[in-house]
Length: 429
Ligand SMILES: [Mn+2]
Image (tube, rainbow, N blue to C red):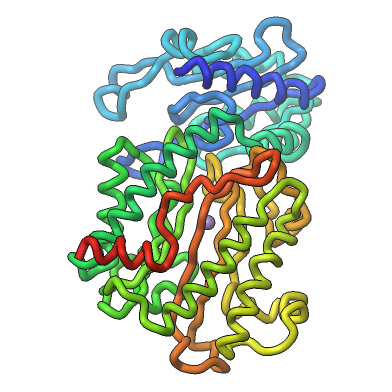
């Protein structure tokens, strides 16, 4: 573990302990998944412990003198290491992680039984966690009150949405690698006839640089597939006159990139594709340019929507007063998604209510990393528009850091200007 992360974890512990008053917070790691596969730690557990294994438990108790932050981990076990994987074990965990005590998870009950009696305990069970039944019995004790919402959970989300300089550095690395992945796909499309081949190009470029987890399953959508927001089948053919939409991002030290680009398979936008792409791009650039502290997500959404709607009006796709179209959400047939979400340890990070819901009035603050991702999507139900604009999906998505004075576009190196995209695709053909 690096010194920076060690220091970050200590600061996070202090904030959680302060939020607890005299209450206790019990948080479990991620649970094992089905079959054989690479485990990824639960984001909250990772944020608070840095401990990478499944089956662990952390306990925060501000009333203790010395053992205020405890970690319970699996002890090294020969059968486990023969079959399941190598483990850190109690001794090595003690030497590595910034906690007050590390215990064998088998001693969870004996260590906590007295301590939890009569206390208010914040705890949410994780499906399939091996300690669920032990924890359940511990928390059923007379006088113990369990809460699955409240201060530590809220504090955790508020902490996670504001990134430290170290967290931004991890995000930059995820973005730099993902940038190579997106450019590799643009250059390779001329050699490939199927969406899954571009998915392979993206993953290959990332895995060559040490990426072990992705932010989400890549969306590689050619032609009409791109009109579905979260198309993940990636098994369709790519025709020469298709636009290809790729929404994909790597993780680095658990931090996600979430980048979308749309490009013509042939290397040249058709006139209709060009018109629509320019409108989405103008809307996206207006959104990125507007990012600054104090602006709400709702306000940011409407800045981008204004540009998108004005453009679609010029093409005859929308009609009427732009402000009215926004107020009535009359553009949502063509752009059903939200403009922005926070990105971090989760790709949709720390925004439980969603920025199109109650969090829409939340103000941007320095240290947030958000997406800006307007789009145009037309399916069969959009019967009122000319046929020529149907079955087209376009999205352009950057990741933007909110700074004291405005913003920094962290994904600025991924080409998006029309001529640059055409050149990148053509250079590989
Ligand atoms: Mn996104």
